[in-house]
Amino acid sequence: TNGSYGMRFESSYAKRYKFRGNVNIRFENLISSERGYPDYLKQNIYNIQWSHSKDSKASPNSSFSASVNLGSSKYFKQSINQVNIGSNLNNTLSSSISYSKNFTSVPQVRMSLTATHSQNTQTEEINMTLPTLQLSVDRVYPFVGKDGVKKGFFKNINLQYNLNGRNSIVTTDSLFFKPQMFRDAKVGFQHSIPLSTNFKIFKYFSASTSMNYEEIWYTKTIERRYDVDQSKVVDKTINGFDAFRTYSFSSSVGTTIYGTFNFGENKKIKSIRHVMRPSVSYGYTPSFEKYYDTYASDASGTMNKQYTRFESGIFGAPGLSNSNTLGFDLSNTFEAKVTDKDSTKVEPKKIMLLNNLNLSTSYNLEADGVTSLAFSPVRVSGGTTLFDNKMNVNFGATLDPYAIDNSGKRINVFNIDNGGSLFRMTSSNMTLNYSLSSKGKDDKKKDKNVQSQRNGGREDDLFGTNRDLGDNRKSQFDEDDDGEDKISEFFNSKLPWDITFAYSLTYGNNNRENKIIGNSIMISANADITPKWKAGVSTGYDFVQKGVTFTQLRFERDLLSWRMSFNWSPFGTNANWGFFIGIKSGVLSDIKWDKRSVINR
Image (cartoon, rainbow, N blue to C red):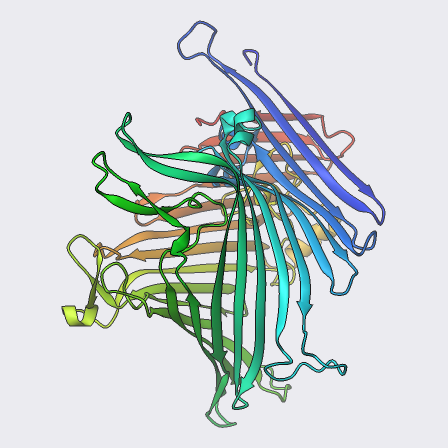
């Protein structure tokens, strides 16, 4: 080992009717080469995972929960004690610890404190909130009479109070929990008082209108000026309390339209039902130029530009120009009634043709045609399920009504007037996920890839199974099955198997590139070769890069009191193999032989 060592601590805890949780801490001291050689390297890597949940019956008005996953950005790439491809390929570690409490006053007050952490393992950048304070007071209806009926424009008028306080920190692995990390923190408070109401128009239209007042508090602002010595514009941080106030107005109206196409009771497809939900919204926010100052952008002092001292604030800054927009949204669902295959059933069977088909766009009433254009791109998205809900299909596209110039910039000329089609498709995507099993949808394998899920990976085996000292899925065999009954069942039934595949297609044409950006398929399959042998494979193919993606072959043998397994990833940056044989019993689980290759990280 050359002096390298690793430590692992795992524990689960629980108090009946109170709380439960588990802790998983891993540490490795890695040393490569010899001291004095140029390639000598010594580093410490670690990973901490903690989950905690409180029983709701213990205290109905308060809750505490934790889901922590933090550590060295390179842990899952450099650790020699685990091979977790899903965690290795994922680029984000995230954590959340939250406490909430409801105060039984009138109106009711809700408070929550949350600490969050998000870590990019590629850039080693860490974003944290320590903490976020949220406080809200329930809606108050000042015009409701003693009967409590909320009907009409005035009686539905309500107001609310919300407070959002945040201490935001952006740091890196090397500065994690060092003094500089806290010196660079940004603190802010956002107060908002929304005033809203909703009502009916002509019986069939639902309308709502609202006004919102916001006040933002900051402990740091900036002062921008041109520095003659450095020959550039610099920002100076000003410590001290400062605030700005804004207000906005919004309104929306929508309805629901039902349409049914009947084909006859004797037809296989009896009818198709189409539900449309169109809505139009309007939003207005005035200019708050009083919060803007000017600065000289060059040494001569003749070129002045505008800025606001609140630019670097975590809750944003007041707008310089008016925001005056109309929004258009349309959602659709399609459902069919068909003749049931079961002739004994009288009622027709309902099937969903499209779970959703959504279209949305907006129109900027303040657009000048130069710095801003009137219409925003049309966003189309949809999804459905096929084959008795075994396949999920999702798709989306962005359609731009404007043309672009030779540099790829949108111009104030409609694409159809520039010799093109009505819309210019700038991007589109489609994903398919399909899972099936010889046991049927109600009896699929229940084991989930928990370790990979904790690190943002998948619950299935598309990225292979893990070889991890902390992976609870010790075997693919069901330990509750009786040996003899299982053998009899095996030879009296079809070959047990399961398969999962995922397909993804992405098209890009933002700057006339007109090409497929992503096109890949991933497959995972498992089968019982004999009552005591299981085999599985996970692989995929990238049609753009023209190469096989991550591939893993796995075999497992049930040796009654013992189990034996072999995993092999034959190629790629994560190429490795591993052989294991050991006793199943938890008491004697340390009697084992585990031989693994070292991944070329």
